[in-house]
Every structure is written in structure tokens, then in C-alpha cells.
Amino acid sequence: MRHEIVELTASHLNHIVTVAREADRVEFSYQDPRPMREVLEEMLRKSHRARCGLIDGEPVCCFGVIRPVVLTTEGHPWAVASRLVEEKGYRRVFLQQSRRGLAEVVKGYTSICNIIHEENSLAIRWLKWLGFTVSDARFDVGGGWFRHFEMKV
Image (cartoon, rainbow, N blue to C red; front, top):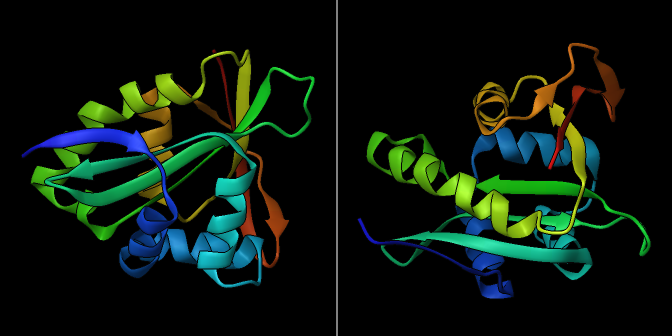
């Protein structure tokens, strides 16, 4: 399988919206009532850095970091993946490349943090594998239970 990490474009986002994992769709719906495409387009505009992981030319994940205010070294990472990352062959490539992708987008930050829907177990395992600390404390966002995650970089 051929793989690469490229600058994220609106075209990549349009594709990923059509093939996003159900767990990612659910998570987005709790956080924002707008259509997923609209939310992702805003996240792309606000991102300091945003990338797309391609396998054999197909977008399998989109990710980036939003800097909440100009004069800070804390970032808020985000990601959405296609259903392909749940398939064995694609999952292996995704995992191999995800550390490299994260390293690209977090350059210049001292810490990164965000929230994750507690039922998104695959993403929580991935975050821990990447080295994030995921809190046990839960809190309600739009009717769904979320947990905080963070990493010092």
C-alpha cells in the first residue's frame, strides 16, 4: 500500500465526510449541531496546520491543530477518520504513519489537549498509543459523555 501525508484540502474533507467512521460522526454530532462538512470546513480554516493521510491515493484521515489564541503554545488537535482505518491492512499503515503525522502538526507547541467521546473506544486506544493521557473524569457535552486528553510535546 502506498501512503503519504499531504496538506489538507477542501476536496479531502468532502471525501472524508462521505466515508467517516460512525464513532466520529456521533462525536461530532454531540459537539456541534451543524452538518459535519460545515464543522470540518471551519476547523480547516482555523487550523494552524492540517494534514490528510492518504493510502493508495484515498483520504483515510484528516487531522490538524487549532491554536485557540495567537500568543499561546497550547494547541487543540482534532482528527476524523474513514471506516478504512478499522480494516486490518489499512489500520497497520494508519498506525505506522500517525506518529509521524502528529509530529508534523504539533511543531512549536508545548502542549496539546482536547476532548473525546467516551464511547469512541478505538480512538481512545489510539490516543493512548500515541502517548496522550486520557482522563478518567467524564463530563457532558451536548448530551454525550466526554473525557479530556492531553500531551506535553
